[in-house]
Picture 1: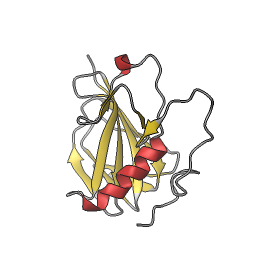
Picture 2 (picture 1 turned 120 degrees about the horizontal axis):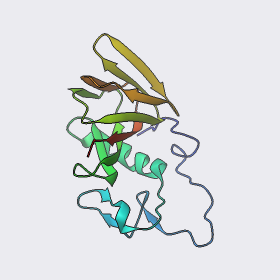
Picture 3 (picture 1 turned 90 degrees about the vertical axis):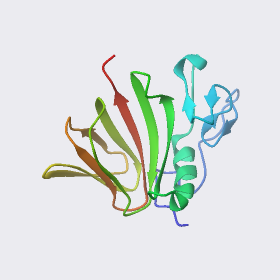
Amino acid sequence: MHLPELGSNIARGTSAPRVPGEREMTGGVPRSGVDRAAGHLWADDLAMQKFSLEALARELLGRAPAAGGQHTAQTVVGGHERVLRQTVIAMIGGAVLAEHESPGEATVYVLGGRVRLSAGDASWIGRDGDLLVIPDSRHSLEALEDSAVLLTVAKAP
C-alpha cells in the first residue's frame, strides 16, 4: 500500500534519532503503562510519556484497508470516562466518519493527508499540520486521500 506523505518521516518509516535513555517503543507507544487490549495509555500510569504519533499513524493506516469502515483508531491518552481523550484515527481515501454529535470541546490535528470536516452547509479542508476546531454541532469527517488525524476531546467533568 502506498502511504501519503505523512509528515517528514511517516511515509519513509523512519523516526528521529534515538537519545540515550530513550525508552523502547512498540507500534509508536511505550511498552509500559499501556493497556493494548483497550488501546489506552493512561496519564497516571507514567510520570512522563513519549510515543510516536507518526509510527502509530503508519501502523493504523496499514490496517485500515481491512477495517469495516475503511478507518481504524486507537485512543492514546485518556478514554470515555476521562475528561481528556486523544485518539489517532487513520482513514483510507474516501472513508467517512458519518455525521455525529461532539461529546465536548474537540479538535482534529491533521498528522498527514487531507480531510474535510463538514458541519451543516460549512466545510473546512485540513492538510498536514492543520488544526481544525470542531464546531459544537453535528459534523462529519471525510478523508480526501489516505490520512491520519489526532482527535482531541475534552468533556466537561
